Length: 214
Image (cartoon, rainbow, N blue to C red; front, side, top):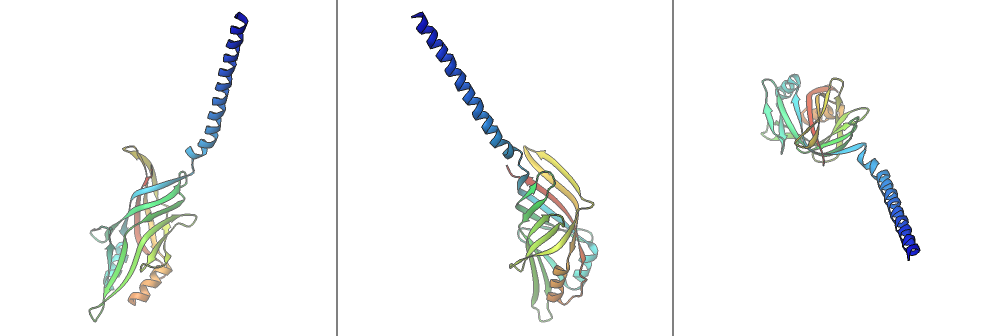
């Protein structure tokens, strides 16, 4: 009986040891699989907004030509002393956690409108903006609700980038981003309204506040 009891104890210890080893191996495998997920290079965005403060000179030139930059819902606009501030809600996107390379999507937009001599209207819609942070940062938009086109270059040379958390959520703030309309945008404006804008026109300065998705 004593020999049998010792044999059972030895078997029990061996079984426990094997169980612990199996658990350790399973945990190691889980860590190998989960670690890349925890250290993912790309983070998704789910809010909040990009605010564009228009350049006073460009704003004056548009108004002088009878062109009114109207906000497209749900974009609010606030007049300043010599320009205007438009706020475009961020609807999504994904950026690199370290370099911020990626894209940021928005709703709303701008509708450039001009009253004609026959009391009609000419208009050019630029909506659903997407900020692309690449080697050549740019802004794209849907033109008149149709195809997407690159309409502006973005200057991040003087931008200030801040990352912070608030109420348990992570945010990225990019301030002082220069926005310059390219030849595609100015060409469309000239063709629509009969203006003579040059191939490159400063649109204003953007301030981006993006929230990281849970």
